[in-house]
Image (cartoon, rainbow, N blue to C red; front, side, top):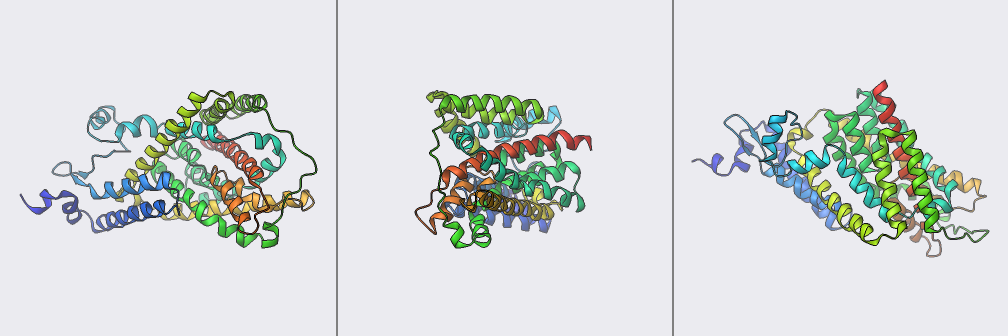
Length: 401
């Protein structure tokens, strides 16, 4: 028995193509970096720590599956033959999770239910014009990136899925890429979730670049006291919005149902269900999502020649959406007679509640007397709704092109 057969994780590095072996080493190092950045909370730890471990492990644990085949026993995302899939389900560790939760969008819906439970639509009902105005501007990346992606050679479906990265809403990207771009589903989803953590690290600099310090310090003065929104009103909004959006965009109805049902359970006071969705569904799905994404980061997958333009376009989409949201904040600032803090605009990018927290933290860096979180959450939740609408439009119309 020689060294290559005894320590196969190391041994396979010497029999694979040099570029594959080099990519494996790079991805192992990247996995370590993601775990470190997650621990430091520079990136989102809920996704990055399991993703980093999965990425490092899958590129370390490569073995000889047969005399002529090299691979892993984590999962096979490309298995489609029924007989082959049944065999793999008995062997590959994460294959049941991938096949029954990931590859059909179920895990995205579970995450959305959890997001619904932790979201308060009362802020939307208090400031509907402000929230929706900003959220529409914050879709700049999801709209503008589409023709650019087409121009560089992506198909209509691939361009639409890539463009949705600009919404900073991982479940939407996952769902849309499954429907529109199955061949690029893995890299698009990986890029989307990697970049979602960048909103926490990168958007503060965009806010400081585009909004002067004196405007970041604005304290919004309310001319009248707004009544609190009752649970009954919120519940009515949930069911009406769910029905209307499902009627208009049935192709995205699982996402609408998941979000509004989660929020309705919150407002109905069913504490056991709310605890189940938040503590079990949301965190279990998020953990499995991060781990599965990490395991999908095999060197052979990442070396797809479309990855580099995809990386650039994903970053462009998020940048444009951030810029669009801030422009929306300026528009509301002018409409309200300069009685509005334009920093709220960044919260229109629907990474709940990250971008809303970014907005409040950037204001707090300048002054402790301006509380904009309620306005930011209105824009944030409206951002979810507008991102779901754009997803529905793409999923409905792109197959017809």
